[in-house]
Structure formats: structure tokens, C-alpha cells
Image (cartoon, rainbow, N blue to C red):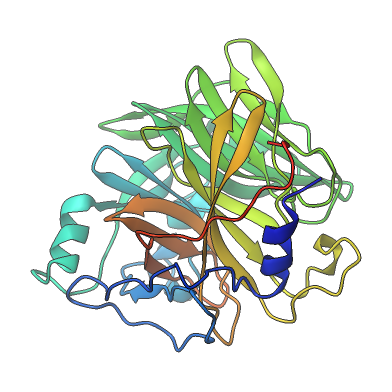
Length: 348
């Protein structure tokens, strides 16, 4: 059985924070702008940050900078990488670009030293043969392990969505994908669902499937020197769209998202009438990945925000959207005290 109390509360628009859950303190100075949120008990409102410098995609002014379509976030040392779903839009078919913000620049903004737009620099990105995969639909996830990185790619062939994992290296000249293209078998053939999150773990990397609420025994894939192996994963309703790096205890946050139109993710129930946007904390265990019981519901706006990237920063997380409702960068504080859901089974 799954964690029934958490699921019921998620279906109630994630009003899961109890009276013991404190409302976060105001955002660091200067306070980024925030949309007017739907009032939910314990929900945290993302603070929008002024992201700029995206208007030269494809060197074509006709590309709307509000729709850069970002799909992942990951730290490499003190540099935050923003992964466009289509890096070639920021270059050409041979050399595209990833985007990068320094921690120093982010700190200067949050400390009030430089409150101008956050403008990422471009890092040359050479995808090699990965760009030519049949049915290519872009890059979905990014994770660093030292100067090595991993990315996932989504593709659709004959109405079947599949995923690929590719290793690369970062050098002073940029990023080059040079490893084997590893097919990732998907647990289900659902529309627009692939491996949207990567987590580096000892000896390899975990690839997290997007739709884990439709099977009684979902799994992630662990890639390492021994090849691919299935790892038990908890039932998580709706979508898992990205993951942070692990902390000192191996825990990591994932983004949990539901667009109300995705009725196939509801397993037959009516489901919420508005979007679900939340952070869930997971951790590895002896029997697979498990819930820690900690979750942060996000205040939802009038228009759903498809948060596709997440990375730790200053006691909270940074988030990015793809292109819905437009490309956004935000910061969310994680409250020091969080309500914990009771577990009803020993399932990881």
C-alpha cells in the first residue's frame, strides 16, 4: 500500500502542513516578486527572480525569451547550470549551449548588492550523436559527479515514449557528451512521460521516471559499472519532474507536479480541480528509495506553473519552469519545521 494520508492530502491541493508547520520568514533582501498565491494552509509562495538574457536564442530575435523552455537545474561546484530542453536553440546543430549562473552572482542579488536581472552566461555544449536519436524530443535532466555529468534525453517513436542516459565531461572549453547512449526502458507507455530527474549516488546515478503513481510497485533505474538495475521507488502521484543533489544523509527533494488536464495520472479518481505543485523529500534505504515524510506544498497561481528544475540554495531551493506559463526562475524557502506524514506500511 502507498502512503495513504499523504496522497489524500495531495488530492486536497496539498494542504498538508499542520499547525506545527511554521510559515517561512520573508525572502532575503531584496525580496523577489511573487504572484498572488491561492491561500492554502502551510503553502509556501515561490518568490520569482528576474531572469534575463535569453532573447538571443538561435541568434534570432523572433524567439520569445519568455519561452526558453528550461528542463533542469544542477550545481557544479559554485556554478548553477540551467538545462534548456533544446540546447541547439542557443547555438546550432553542432554546438549548442547550456546556461550558467554563478553562486557569487546569486548571492549578490539576494544580499542586495546587485538587484539587476540575473543573466546567465552560455557554455558550449556538444551533444554528439545524442542529438540525432530517432524521435528526439530534447534533454530532460542533468546531474554532475565531479567533472563528469549525466543527462537524460526523451524521444518518441511510433507513439512510444522512451528515454536515454548519456555521460559527458566538463572542461574549460565547455561540455561534451562522449559516453555510450544507454536506452532507459520506461515502466509504462504513457504520453509525454520519461526520465525527468537524475540523482548521483555512490557508484552511479539514479534515473527517476516521471509517472510513479500508476503502478503498485514503481521503480527507478540505477546506472553504474554493472549496467542498469531496477531500484524500488515509492508511489508518488502525478509527476516527478526533477530532483536536487543529495545532502549529507543521502536525502533529496523532488518536484511533484500535476497539470489538471493530465487526467490519465489520476488513477480513476476525480482529483484536484487545480494544479498540484509541491516538494517531496526522498532518501535511499536498504529496500530502495523511500519517503522521509517531509513535504512542502507550494502556493498555486491562477495559471499552473510547470516547475521542471530544482536545486538547493540558501536553506531552500531554486526552481525553473519550462515554458508554462512562461520561463520562470524562483526561490522557495524550506520551513525549518515541517509536518511529517504518518506511514501506514513498510513499503519504501
